Amino acid sequence: MKNALLIDLGGTNVRHAFFIDNVLSKISKEKISDKEFIPFITKLLDGAESKIEYLVIAAAGPNNQGFINLTNRNLLINSSELEATLNLKKCLLLNDWEAVAFSLSEMKKKSFLLIKGNVPSNKNTLLIGPGTGLGVTLIIDDQIIPTEFGNVLSPTKSMMESFGIESNKKFLSLENILSGPGIEMLYEEKFGKKLSSEKIITLALERNGDALFIVNNFLKTLITIVDDLVLSFTCKRVILGGAILNSLKSILTSEKILNYFSSRINPKYSQLIEEVQVDLLLEDEPGIYGCLAFLKTK
Image 1: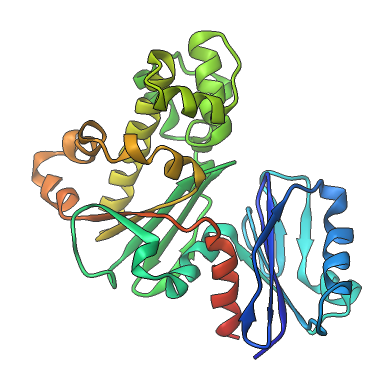
Image 2: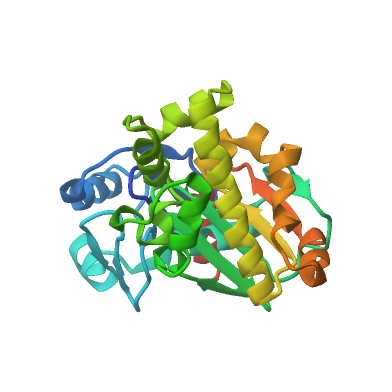
């Protein structure tokens, strides 16, 4: 098997692990700036216990034939340049939520919390998760289809009504609402106070009224998008993921939130939504496992 360095590069954190002699090392996480990216990779390669020939990078941005221009960093990743600069046999690139889709082959049953429904898992699947941005990937007829759905503009105006906020330029794209930064902007716009998304989530879990208002409507909005995508692509399974939704597990699985799945759907189609299996992916590092699964296909 190929010796490889696996990288999951998000807008906030970078995770890495080595895959050497068919053994996956412990996964590490840290913060780096854009200018530190190449020195960081170089240092890891220089310190590896064996010669590394493959580099696999999952990054938050569209994968355009060997290039990823990160949506939440001022960084362009070029696989050919990295191969030459770092003396690698191959550099493989994936969109970050494309990597999450690949990771499913490495996941065990305990990696998922069943939230609702129960259908065979080998059906059309929607994977979605808010983080620094909004990740959305589809698996249709066993084909993994990464998207940039988080950057669509059309649905946001009507969504602001749930928060009692007038539409404005701060919330143009979907991920301006459905993301960690979106939670912060919504709270500040509604209540005039700037707090981190982590603090807002903590307050919501403590039943603070203002924070709970934002979180409840955040989840309601997310479920509205999930319903739209399920109907659009006839998905039978939804996998929710990311640190935000895992932090909100107790609220996400409450009866009030689960009722949103079919409450706004035409009754003719509500049964389709009610039958969909929804799972929460509990794994903290799916991107790394996705890189590994992708490597195994090469």
